[in-house]
Image (cartoon, rainbow, N blue to C red; front, side, top):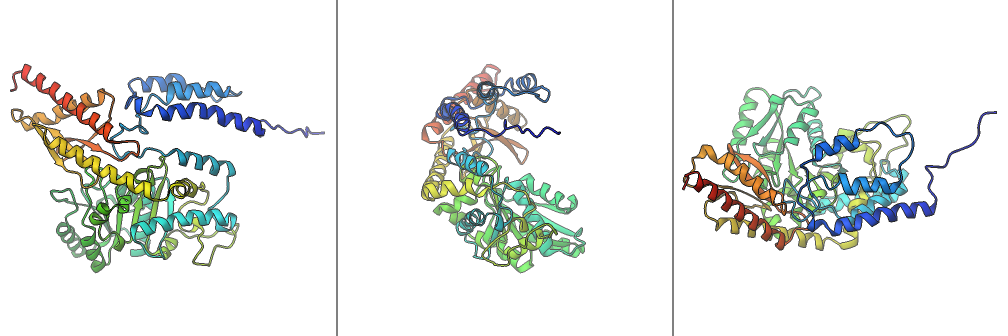
Length: 485
């Protein structure tokens, strides 16, 4: 007789489940509580650490959970950028609400499938509610459809595919795409993945405020039409990574409507500032666009892995993604209900809606709005402080919460400034109270301050400016000692 015994090692008892979570929380709570005191980064020996500790074969037997927690919290997690801390002013911070971690625990534990509405009607509708709330924030109409994704890159990809299917024939290789020279690189990647030839993705010059120049766009579209190409998509920014620039959305919407072009907005960084009066003024016209990329893991402070795509014409999103399998149940015909597998590339997907729904339901939108307004004030304060410092040049004042600057002593030639500012950024970061990153603007190395974490407040911004001043003073002394006055 074959062995009919079963193993239950993977099926934990109620007591084991509680103990596992309690052990994890004993590490998580002190970790979060200590975030303000942790260094802004600690990656100096990260590569050696990763290779030495994690060069291991597939384990045949288990390791005690306490040892696993020691490895994570004492060795691996500290050797990283402190992206959850208040001093993380690099790239585009998010923060990572603990409330969403709890939502993920619930979602993963119940493990319900929401790709098809019939499989979990209430949970699928919960996720659809999140999309409706996002549409309301952006001023989009009731027929809007959308999906939650892993982030802005996947959302931009979905938008390009939808626009291509809506505006171009099956033979689409003459289609052309337009975006400013400040657009996020994920847009180019999305176009390539969608089959658009690289040479058909046009980089349109930006103006002195790093916004897409409508006149240059119109000229390029007209030129391509004369060449027999098929312009079909313009991608605008609602907050660039480089400077936080917001393209002239109202003017672009009117142009695209007249030219019958799809207008997509990469609002991964900035779109949620629509919750603020300042943001609504800057992004006037966003409600007239065809699609918007959102990143709740930026503007709503959620953990990484939370993006979104809104498409004004929900039917276009479905036409671009809908296919059928004989093994699938009937899809919804009720326009009030949504099968997410019909409007996205994914059939198997996690229950993402709860990680957004729970914190919004728990707090309401008010605290999110207040936090965004605070970040706008902090960025403006930092720019004003920088403007009072001798030899500091503001390259881009904050349109939202990014400020770009550089150190520019009069006695130093332009050819030496890029190296000098790389040294300045390293000196600031080595103090480990804040972490700043750079970008290149018109051949110039510039340092960025990006304020967005819900944990960043006035005290950390004051520390940031103190470290900038101290680092600048150090470099001045070095220049004087080398004979540069």
